[in-house]
Image: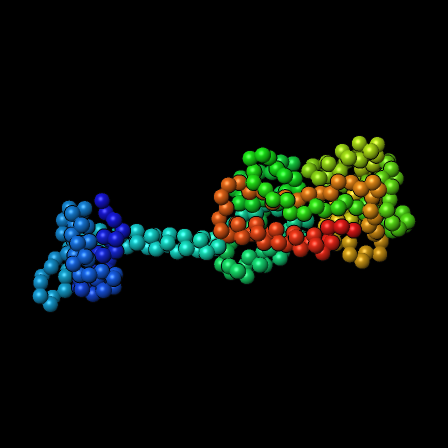
Length: 296
């Protein structure tokens, strides 16, 4: 059986011209190198070098040239594999991450910046998808506003308080009683995931808003509130674009609705890069929580 070490010996002898210099290049003794070449010749069924003896250099045979042609490609592939494996263990390579609006806008920017600062050649790919059930197909990590299925590994990153987003003139400052929303015109996200849980909780409290517009765009929700189309219930982190908006006010809701819980999901063993992104995401989420960014 041909082994890479035999092919490396062949390549070194051709490059250096003598067994002695090739042995020095590879860190072998000359006798060890000769054994490698002899093993290669047994594997391929013939001599790969003519050995004229004396000071004259060895010459590669026609069979040796055939073997060398394929050997060089195999050696390059092996070297590329070694380099890729070394980058992998060092935290390089590629990571594919599923995300959604709030995470993309708030959580991930410092995570991506830190990962790229540590590993400038890392390949980070993001896929934004609003779905009812998490699917990690083709992904290393996925941010999701729920714990996912029992077959997934997970870490709970943060709890994001729900608030009422309303036109400035609609309510007095301060908390708004949830019953005030019954029958009120409402702008909402698609009825999946956290939005579905919010609406189900409102229904349990006997509150049924009148939805006049649904959109998957948080900014569009706030824009329509600003325009006076209705109110919206959103997690605090989804309202960061409101800022010092003079036309929109954020109100606490009484009684409070359960917060949106954001999880990071994965399945099985992670690459070093994916594991580092997971840890950076945990750190970024703790920073948001300790700063009060998830509460009004």
